[in-house]
Length: 155
Image: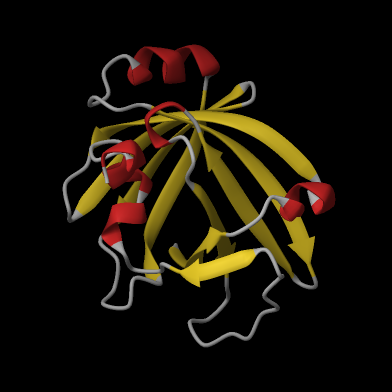
């Protein structure tokens, strides 16, 4: 499956008042090779394994495959991950026909807040709420796989 998304910095916390859900996510990477990443994630009481391919030139599209796994399996696999396990709170905000996922990072990435919106095509028009800041789509340093190795606190 091809994932198409745009990524933005968030300039205020007013998104929280419109959030339809809020859930803690802990995730690590078994592989952060530039051609592919393999992620282990615990979201609430569920575990996931995800493989992502290399992004296209604009950074908006890439292959993504994800499967649900047992929580105990995800916990065991997290222990095998590369250094730099991420801890964040995810808020979901519905605006018209789109859902923004806003990640508020903790620990080594404290202070970083990033929003993503998934699209059906790279040129799809979507509403941009007031709390949305600078677009960072395609900027590799904002990829979670890179934040695990080069955290925001060190920029």
